[in-house]
Length: 83
Image (cartoon, one colour):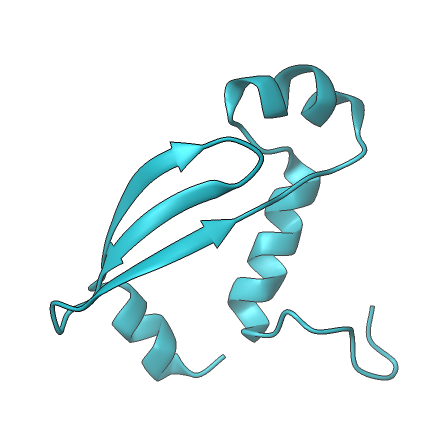
């Protein structure tokens, strides 16, 4: 992910709108344009099924995936030799 995208993201205002099977957010960009973002996460671990999902929290497994996406800016399948 480019440093420019990371830099720009710091100036967006994010407002949580609703959580159900997906989490919905409104993002007001620094140019005052409003975008709608839907985010869905799940994990098969016990914590997520017992405490995470019912309380709108995430487990460390989901967080590690979010961190990977944040570092790389890529949500596609891994590239050859990478896991």
